[in-house]
Amino acid sequence: MIKFPGFIELQQNGYLGVDFSNSSLTEEDFIEASKKLLNHGVGAFLATIITSSEETYRRNLPIMAKAMKSPELEGRVLGIHAEGPFLSDKPGAVGAHNPDWVKEPSIVFFKQMQEWAEGSIKLLTIAAENDGAEELTKFAADSGVAVSLGHQMADYEAMKRCADAGASLLTHLGNGIPNEINRHKNQLWAALACDGLTAMIITDGHHLPAELVKVVIRAKGLENILFVSDASPIAGMPPGKYNVLGNNAILEEDGLLHNPEKKCLVGSSATMLECANFLADQDFITPEEIVKLGFSNPLKAIGIDPETFTAPCNVSWDADSAKFICE
Image 1 (tube, one colour):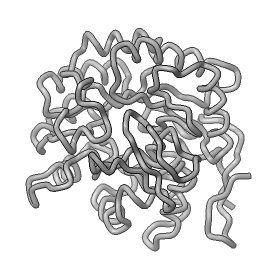
Image 2 (image 1 turned 60 degrees about the vertical axis):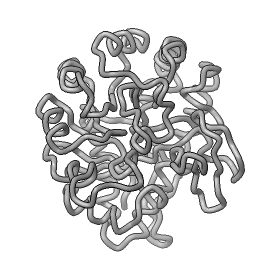
Image 3 (image 1 turned 45 degrees about the vertical axis):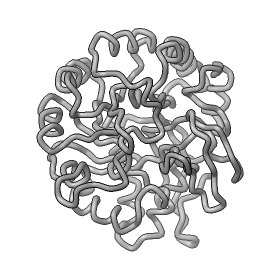
């Protein structure tokens, strides 16, 4: 029987209306949203803050750093994923992020962010093509932070340079790029070809079609893939119109969360449990492999031995329904 502590989420933007990047975030709201998420198939997670104003970083990073040390969350909120601000500001690549808050790669500002976060930033997403990306990658990686490439217009050479400097991941591969790309020279093919970069993919059924998920897994191999939900702050909420992550977005009945004006997705309405069960519905991956991609590989990506991770086991594989379930 397959039973384990729960899926490990590396990209959680909020939950049930609580936005980790909102300038009104409170410690109490962060703790309550986190506790509910941890009861919904998630064994542990990184709290994600997207590209934000300097004032929001100064305010929210200490709040999250303090909250994750609380008795309720210690050992379960494993750190912070800073998805930005060192991204591309180009349309398509910037996605739902505010281009006005994008910054050029800066070791000085990253050090300031890490100081506000009390050293709890464990994952940093940057665009590989920007001046200073290699230097920031090396600095962050040398300090024990996993560096992921995403929201970028980078070509193969730029990704390779950052990989050589210490980058080890790709943030939501296949997303955070323009809708129309060159059929040969594009960010997707370059990322697939760049050895040494583990691909994070969103398997909510909306961000990537199943056939592309299959191709990515085959190209990268099971050791170099992990899945995330990229859950937005309205994950778990009913369909409707929301202002989320700075976007006027619509959550459709089928779970699609999008900004119709910008023609981009605004994170996911799914959690890791739903993403795992989307994979379980496919014929190219086994339950054991899904656990590898959703539990073991994410922990390894941020430097944690899966054998040493302890949390209550609350997820199991139900063979009768062919689904992962919470207990």
